[in-house]
Amino acid sequence: MPHPGATTRPTSRRSPARKAAPASSPAGGADPRFENGPLAIVDVEDGQVLAYCVGGLVLDVPAKSIAALVEWTLSEGRLGQPKLSGPAKDADPLIVLTDAACEHYGLPVTLTKEERLAGRIPEGHKVIKQLTRADWQLTKRGFGPWARIYRPAQGSERSCVQLCIPSWDALDTRHWADTGQLPPADLARLLGTYAARVMTPRGSTAVTGLELMTALHPPTRASEPDATGKRHSEHNPGSLGKDPVDCAPCEAPDGHPLLADLPRFHHRTPAEVLVEEAYDWARPLTDAECLRPHLVGIDVNMAFAAGANGLTVGLGAPTHVKNPVFDPKLPGSWLVDLSHVDLSRVKLAKDKWAELDAGLLPSPFTPKGERPEGPAWYATPTVAYAVELGYDVAPIEAYVRHDNGRYLDGWYNRLRDAYLATMADLGVHADMPPADFLAAMDGYRQRDPQLAIVVSAIKATVKGGLGKLRERPRGEGWKPGQPWRALARPTWRPDIRAAVISRTRINMHRKIVKHAAFTGQYPVAVLSDCAVYASDGPSPLDFLPYRDGKPLPGGFKLGVNPGLVKWEGTQSVLWGEGVREQFNAPDLNLARYIKDGTVTDADTGE
Image (cartoon, rainbow, N blue to C red):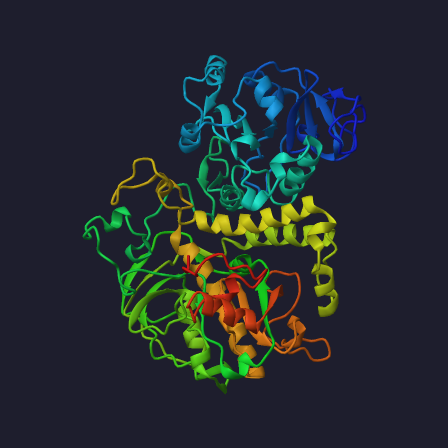
């Protein structure tokens, strides 16, 4: 809470009342180091520099330069956020610069094309020279949209400030919408909510998603005191450690140094490369489905977060094993032939088999839903599902990780809680009856557009953080066979990404199979976390099998919690057949367009 002497104000752009940063500690149990919150939006009004903090607090800022602003932030601003786990470090304060603040401090309001491509302003810029003269340093990223300004740590004391410059496209409109255009007080509220529920942004939502993993499982911790009473840095159990580990060759993306000996244009087969990706599958409608009036899309909430929940993943390097016995509890990559798995007869539970129309189902083993034709590499959850369906497996070889754990549990829990709390603020609560849930979801974004943006950012934090686990080269003069910058991170772990996507796809297939066995209904399209069904009515309740308000066990259930589903959109069957005919694509993935019915071009599958 703010100091009693500070002024709080409603979220408007201008107000005559403002106070300097308080000089004494706040009353109550708040951490006095961070009494003004995790971040501030720095703006200039009538020549006065102001810092808009969370809760409506506005502080006078006496700093005349960026270097002085950094000094003020660390000495008087009282901004930051307590650490998220025992061995972690407190979050550095975040300063967001408005257009007026950029002008005031001698920074360009927008970047040139060359600067955008470089991701930074030139090293010789006068502001960078000012920082250098004041003994401040920049990270290797330089002074870009998310600049980190620091001095080397003195003991355990860190001196570091994170800058965010929205006019330099720091806040990607795909995830943050028009956040960068908000008045300072509103921007402070929005980013402050995200910071409080997720963490103080450290960059893009993807970067923040990855940083959240590390903040919850720091690579090192302080040891017990030695004979002299001194503590040392040691490995933190359950973390990925401080040193990167090599992935298995099958887990390496094209161009990785492990594949440097392959011919340049060699196309790796499924027996050479692990391909665990989300679904992109569709099929023509049956005659019976064409007689139904509606196509209804349902979407799994926070699907990839739900896929991470409770998942055991590798923590260390892989061990290569020939002819292993499959162990569903052992994370890894397995070369195994699953072409014998027949979806026309699958086991639903112990000694309970179901007869299905396999031609109407995607294979659970490939992203395109095609039945595998021979040995291929799979992550553990995919192979475990083949066993669950009632089929024996005999791996040829594997790369397994005996050092493993539920590394993503805390990450999932924090993002789940952030999502549910924000949706509750928007009037959508857990455990609502199905009809009430659908009604609450109708127009929820309009109830508080700023909080709706927070929801989008939380979702992007999940997907982006997982994507960063297999970050590809980003220019930098990279050539195939050479290492790229991301490989130096302990968090460059394509095996963990593959395991989460594998489990997410399997979770979707399991629900599809249960639904088909119980209702005889099959999806006509699946795209990642969205499935489309032909229906006699326009609502999910017209085809989801609820009895006395209770859903089919193991099937689709309406609700806001991660892993449950919401309504994605409804179009007519005539619309679906029409766009497929228009683009001469009988397998056009209708799930991609079910939300609003707009099809801008032929489906390329990208």
